[in-house]
Length: 208
Image (tube, rainbow, N blue to C red; front, side, top):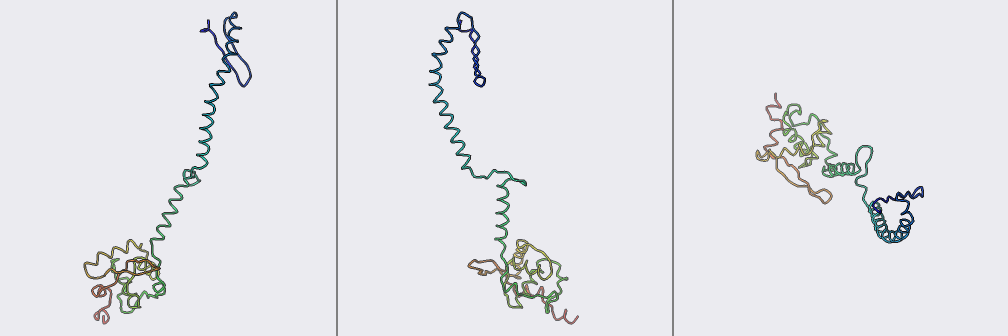
């Protein structure tokens, strides 16, 4: 008899639907009345556990760092990375020292061969180092060579590109050194005698 019983409870509408033999209605209602208190006792721990999980989930969401928050042009996390990478690049490039900034190099520097005839970049780097040496600054960093090239000739070379001058160490054109700036040491390039010969006008050139 009980296998043919169907109970439907609509909590929103407050309705109870019961499909069973007419003769069993009273007994089924009695059973339901006995069952509901037991159902309530069983349901309370489950409801409390569910509420506990909900509370913890809300707390976790409140304390989660906003690393995945989206913005108009991408994620906030990516934006932070871009900002930090730009800051890192700026910090890695040494700003020219004050005495380097004050150097006034001429595009037609006396005693040096014409800039336009240099051709190779490494010769341009030697020209800049030699011009600075003649005017009292013996040794330049990659960043300072880059700075003076841009300031004097409006030719842009990244400091990491200028560093290719290291290939001329074996030719005894340059020698690596160090300079202290604000308590930090940076690598410099000093021009040697053979390096100077590459950019200094000879007597034959002067008389030509």
